Image 1 (cartoon, helix red, strand yellow):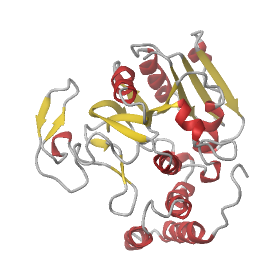
Image 2: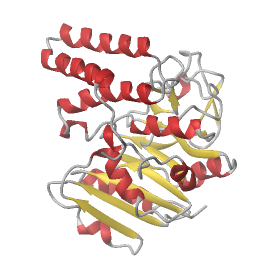
Image 3: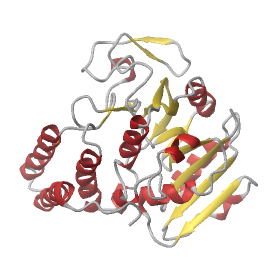
Image 4: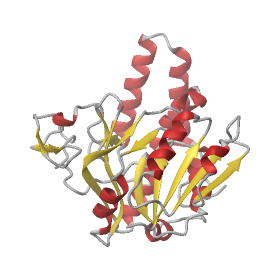
Length: 314
């Protein structure tokens, strides 16, 4: 499957962005186009990244956030499939072929991802799990061999013995079909995205950043689309490399947006577990005398529960 456009959002990524784009250029089959959204970088994205005919660089003078920035990138997409890749991700050369095969083998599959690792070799995510009433990256922080459920897969596809681990962290639970996928590094069926678009948007721009991919998955699932997981690590994610650019705002958005997902999709997430998670965050912050951060969590909870959710695109 070579009909894949790639979207990368960047804000002052520098060498990190260059490594990401270089890994995209090495994909086999090659990308149809690489769309880089320069999302309010202090210095415009380097012209070195525009050396190929299949490259588009679209610069916004302000930071649009992930949701609106991704929507801007999606406006350029003409391929049947689109890959969203964080600028702090490096892909294995066979990432697109492997993930696209998992996606293309099922015509009701709307999106797919591989297992994603952190630079230290631990798992960053293996699909989105909502089984405990919150929204979690399956297997986050575990060694690959610690993913429960029998056997994890190595980068070559060979079976790796697996120790028993926490419930919900298994590559076999939820089997080949996780509830959702992470926009950290995933391929989406373009037709599925357009089917679930609302108010002219695919991602909900009200979220700005964080959990907008979970909200999108909720719409895809409600429309009858499945997500697929390639149970092999084919991508490495540095992890929240852009969060420092938002400062405390990132903490507030992460807190608020979890509740917005639940308000928009009451069957996705549960209020008591979400509030319990918020309370745990506040206790940890107060114990470390991080009073300002604790206040941000309170803001996130209050706005998450009470702020009006106006019309899409406003």
